[in-house]
Amino acid sequence: EPLGALDKQLREHMQYELKALHEKLGVTFVYVTHDQGEALTMSDRVAVFDKGVVQQLDTVDRLYESPCNEFVANFIGDSNRLRGTIARVDGEFCEFHLNDGTKLVGRRIGDAAEGAPAVACIRPERMNLAAHGANGHLDGQADARANGAAANRLTGEARSLIYFGDHVRMRCAVPGQDECFVKVPLGTGALDAFSPGAPVSLAFAPEHLRVFA
Image 1 (cartoon, helix red, strand yellow):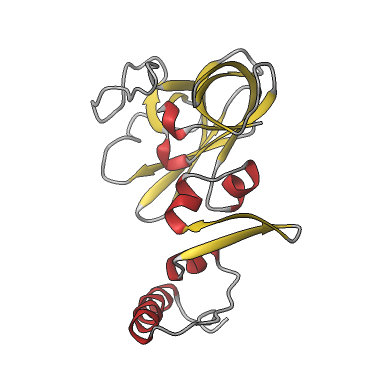
Image 2 (tube, rainbow, N blue to C red; image 1 turned 180 degrees about the horizontal axis):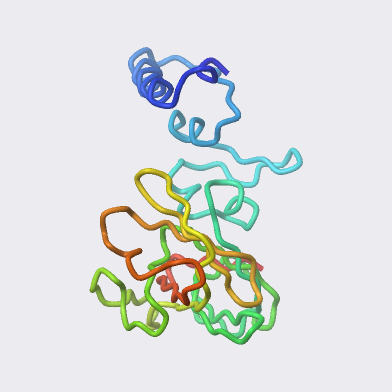
């Protein structure tokens, strides 16, 4: 791991330098790292293996935005997992019911039929944060729509705020599910109304919820 001993800023600068050098020389680089972010930054195409079997070989952006199965969705980057059942199928989308009865709409991945248990995944940065009972996003934009369905909503409770410099990660408790994380950019004022214990509403577009059965 050639960059493992460097501080964060120098390590990131060297990643860009190595990437540019690779493109300039046009030769194959063999680079060893256990840092997933480093691997994604320096790669054009990535193969994700599980138990020796290739799960997905794709460009970096497609691996992140369009994972082919639950393993890839959870292995690449951060992802919130929601457990439930596929209630209705409508083309590439489906109606997904959580275990507490909450109804969501998401993009169906695979050939799962109605009634099948499933897991849905949503990236933390794809969730919009709003005070419980508020109408619409905090930025004032209308709810996104896909396949004729309004944006999905989950209700929960804020547990903690974790600062990462350029954004804050809010940890939320959602009834009947694992904890969810929401990434909120700093400087938007979106966190002014929130503190640990406050009720929250999490909104996200159906096209960003991927349902795996």
